[in-house]
Image 1 (tube, rainbow over the protein chains, first blue to last red):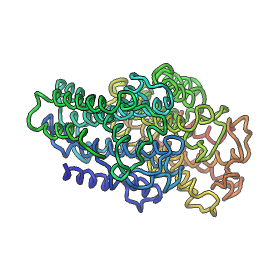
Image 2 (cartoon, chains in turn cyan, green):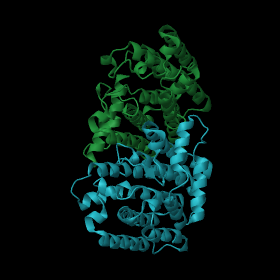
Image 3 (tube, helix red, strand yellow):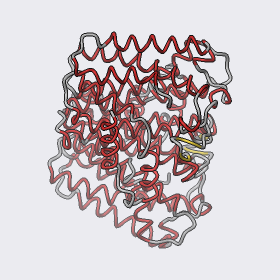
Image 4 (cartoon, rainbow over the protein chains, first blue to last red):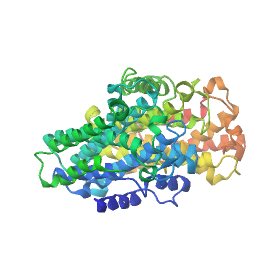
Length: 290
Length: 290
């Protein structure tokens, strides 16, 4: 897995315009927030899903880069003073703390746009068929859009300090983080040449995976250490955010996360050994400490 | 031309998720800033370029919607307090004045993302070939990205109150507005089935058109009326922005704009009568009062 993370870093380094490209400040800022950090979970999920359906990792390079750029953009915008107002991310000052708010907004915009450019370059760079490319663009756009990730963020910031409600909590998380995981997994499967049945099981995996991830994320915000997480802890409570531990308590939340991972493995039951990386990622997600 | 503008409005209305789709506030906000106003110049350019190379307008519907969504997103983000801090746009309060800064940022993000989703739906909705679709995605992403529109905006806000310099001014405008015009025109031409020679002439047209537009825009900011423009006037000077009238004076700027329009017509010299809408748009651009 460590080797794949290094591979993702190198793909991102090659994909992002060099820091000396005009306008330098923008490209420096894009690289500052995208390179050198992060679990690269979305990229790994795309690669693992591609492998699981019998594809080759190389064909996911464009999608891996696009996913990490979209993820980086969403963190930059989420950290803005008008949103979560965070100072620390991946152990470094947040983008707007270094480059100012205007450049932070524009850096996010540019990363989101470059993500789609990179997908559109897949046929030329990696020999991905045009039809598959178009399907992957649609997966990413749906996952990141107004009824995906951005929709989840809107409900999250709108619901702060309101009474906790299970449906709202589920909406927020299945959209804010779950939708991009789903795009990563389904996109990777499409690039690996998945048939409809495989795609359905990967989608089922994605839904349980997203929930397990988010519950663990909420737990870590309550129990983790700033040094490990690379970001401030306890901020959910300060912001009055909806979280699983607040709704169910710590113990039941942990049980729920374990249940989700079990469902992940269940969804992969009929998959061959090539799906082991995906299985590993599902088990990893609730054991992590950052 | 009026009929086409109405057509664009109706395409946008159908393309944007209904206001009652969850999260309602986001979809309301997207519709607030995209519908009911604007010259729809980018959509018209795409349609006109498609016609000019012998294509059918219907095949540009997806691109027309995508372009206007990208344009709307860029205006929302440009108007933010951390950027130009504008209160008025198209005669209405700017998005963040109505919905707040956080929703304004996210509305822009969602519109940009939906633009790419809409392009990826072109094969299914309008029978556009997959390969053409991928090429159009790349045109839009390049035009809107870090070395296109966003790049221009970065240099614009970074260069405020600095000494005027012809190269910088040209960089800002050829990127901030010119790049998206170019994507509109080249994308429309690709959808119309343009050959390489036609595409080269359309690109030449695009460069002169972008310059003519921006010079006129700068002139209108100095000489226009708030009522006609639907936005505050004289703001360029207040913000210490680089403009053509500040660099060359009003008269020489007007002469330069006329020269650009002449070059637009020159680029279309070998095009048939079907290019008349494009010719009309070029002449219109320097005669407009808003």
